[in-house]
Length: 336
Image (tube, rainbow, N blue to C red; front, side, top):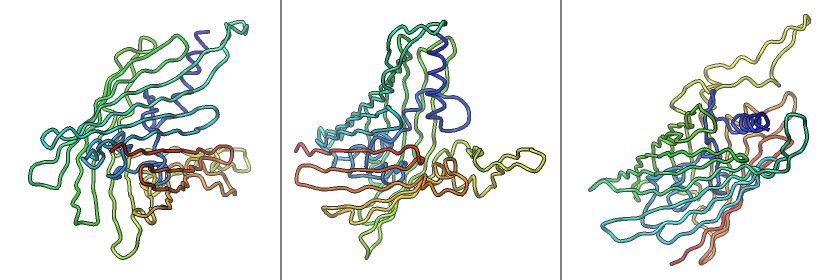
């Protein structure tokens, strides 16, 4: 039974790995917001979305006061991601607090002993709870924010606890068409390990930007991720070549090819209207999941948003592979 648990653990790590090398709690880098997912999955500068502080605490602001969001993503296989966020402004002096909870359910598994005899079923899940705060630097257009997060991961009767933090700085001027931010995510420590070996958290340094066109109802979003490690490339086995002698040569990744894998792009049309159209593209996902001589559209994301008086509904479709896609649903409620 222990070997089965260890195998499941390794599979879960590889399934959600971000950069070469093992790390723990990689579910923290999954996108739970439909709007963020539709814009390429990495957007950091959504200042009117109460889900954004889960990725960028400096985006917490007073306009998110009493905003509640419920999110659900039907991920790969039977895996599902559920999250909820809420923000509340106490007063002008203290500012706004943001809270969020994320739950990744891997579903049920059949347990067996070393002889292959079934011992019943068990569950596996990841859970995180966060509190965030942002502060506007006096007489400036800069905002600094931080989030503290408690993490719990469970596989059968094995469990792990951890703590992490995100820190960020953001530039925003309501009279300017652009927004910039730098975020350092998942700074933390695994307090208790599944076994005797503690693992590193999936640290990421990201740069985000927004540019809103003046005469066209279109907003562009750009994100450069994993800046803490320049070489994030992984050869795609589908692009390997075999010569007449049967020698296999792995794909060679150029400097430009590796560079573009840090980038994701999103576009939002009619962002201030009742109906919004969103498109995105994740270059790394596209490169690593493409197939030879087959157009898979991997890395492509799309979605829409509906705005009503008290409710906003967002949907996103994320293309991973011909065999699997993901749908994300978000309901935002104004409690004021």
